[in-house]
Length: 365
Image (tube, rainbow, N blue to C red):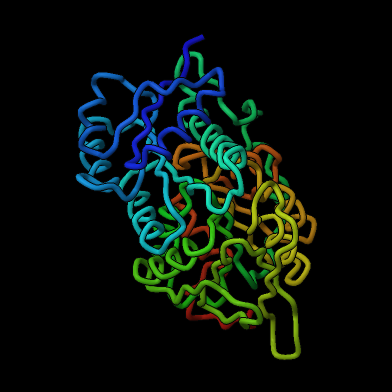
C-alpha cells in the first residue's frame, strides 16, 4: 500500500518539525519534503511529486496566497490545505485562499499547553483532511461512508406538501464559504424570512466570513450576538466557539448563544441550530445542508423532518466534500438533492410558494 506523499511549507523550523512529526506517526502518510517559503515549495513540486501540500499563509519571500496562485497554474487538482493562525490577518488571508482554490484550512495550535497537545491538534485536524482529499488515489483510505442507494429515490416526505417557510437554517463545513457566497448571491434580497448559518469555523474567521458575505451577496450578514432579534432578509452567522440557538420572546424570536459541549466535534454545530429551529418554528423550518466533512446536521435534519419542516441537500457533484449533505441525503431526509446553483430557486419557491419574494411578509401567507 503506497503512502500519501505530503509536502509541508512553513517559514518556521519549529512548525515544520511539529507537522512532520505529527504526520509521520500515521503509517499511511509520508512527509516527502519541507520548504521555508512558497518559492522553494514551487521548485520542489516536480522533485517530490506530493499528493497533498500543507501551505502556511504568512511567509517571507513568497507567501501562501502567491504560492497557491502559481501552484494552481500547473497543479489545478493537487489538494492544498492552508495552515493558518487565528489572527485577523491570518484569517482574512485564509478566506481569500479558499476563494482562490485551496481545498481547506487548519488553524495552528494555540495555547496547546504542551508539545504532545500541539501534535495531537495537528493530527486531529490535518490527518482526516489529507486522507479525505487523497481518497481517490491508490492505497489511500477515505473517510466517507460507503455509498448507499441513490438518495433521490429514498427522500422522506417528498409527497408531503411543504408548509410555509418561516426561517431558513444553513449548515456547512469544508467548501462552505464559497458555497454560501454563491447560494446567497442568487437569492432575492427581499426574501421575507431570516437566514441562520452555522459554518464550522473558529472565532475571528466567522466575523470575517460575515463581512465578506455582506460584500459578495448584498445581504446584511452579521456575526450574530446574544439576543439579536430575527428579522426578515437578514443573515445571522454563528460565531466561532458558540452554538447558535433561538428562543421566542414577547418581542419576537431572538438568538441565544451558548458554549455547551461540542457536538460531532464541532462548536458551533449544525445539529444544535437545526434542533432549535425545529423546536421554535416547527413545520416552518427549512434546513439546507451544504458541502462539508463529517455528519453534523444529520440528527438536526431528522428533527426538522419530524417537526414537519423541509430539508434540502447539496448534491455530490457540486460539493467539495459530500459528507454532511451525503449523510442527510442517504438517510432519506432531503426533499430534494440539488446542484448548488439550483438550490436558490428551490429555496425561493419553498419560501414564496412560487410567487415573487415581494409578495410576502415574514408573517404573511
